[in-house]
Image (cartoon, rainbow, N blue to C red; front, side):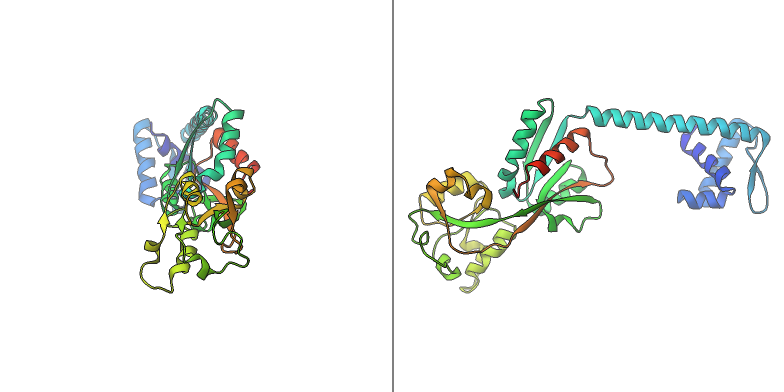
Length: 298
């Protein structure tokens, strides 16, 4: 006996008519009528007496409906129990970070999660902003960390802010611009520039350095999505790179590099997103809490 068709009959009884039940279910009247006919044919008696505008359960139909309601309720509870069990047992967290240059900014949260909850497993993947949004929508990620603005247009996402990410331009300590006060865009455009990702707010703003000469501004920059390599290049040349304010405060950074005296990038609002229609597993909720404790924008 089909549980979905039993639900149709239960709603017919509660609604008082096939038309009202079909409207509540979002189905056609003929579909609900067919479910009723199929069940009555299977059990061998009429569940309802049909009247001009409504239906009313027969004596045998009333007993059948009461038992059907208990069976459907038990099936729904069984399904919910199984789902809750799966949520509790799932230990894998698939995390997307976009753009790729932000991956290092979730290191603290990932490290704390792994140390505190050794039974959990993290799959961390860096991707482009557009690619990350599509991957979360497809269900390839459980959670996506990235620019809040890129995720706000997705109706299927539940988004939680993590603060503002501040970034700066930097160079080696002996760089000609390292000790210059009030650095201007024109000063920077005379040196090689390394963008941390191909398509992001950083690259969009860095393009303005080369808009005056004409041509494809992106072709006038290096694009390297791996900060340790960027740091090595900047340390050994006159190239200018991009660094987060958090890392710029570390002794490791300050020993090798200097921030340029220019307020070039506007703060970026960072957030994480999950899909609304999928309840996060316990493991994902633990990671969400860890992200809020150690946010990328800290």
